[in-house]
Image 1: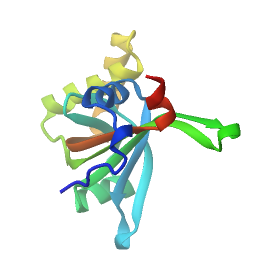
Image 2: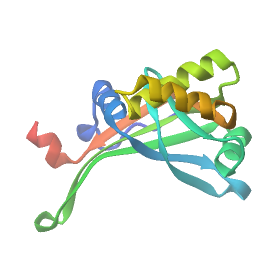
Image 3: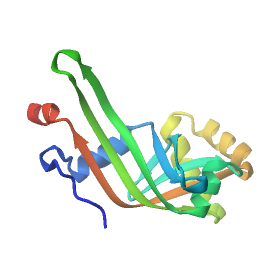
Image 4: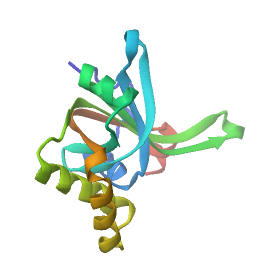
Length: 161
């Protein structure tokens, strides 16, 4: 179903992929947009075991796209250092494939919202809960259930380890 990486020596382990998803603060969600055009949008997110959590408004291109076609991918660039003398970059990235769904159950939505908020404001639980309460009804929580993930790093980084 998902193609194996051609340059398998540069493949990151499952744990390395998870570590990158845990620490990254943003990535690019790619969906099937209108008229078959791809639509890729930068997103903040939280990684929760086998799923990614996103939030969005109740209307808009992104939400319409995931409701129309739940198959998406999400890419995180962990590192991208330009090395001019070598005509290359030292990169590390992860791409995730899966299906999305909207959390409709209020308890599930609250829990996912808390996970997302805690990632970006870990030291202010009272403030997080107040913000969630304020935005809860006008916010949609999208969950991406991960079916496949693949990480890759430049051969130069691989050779350093």
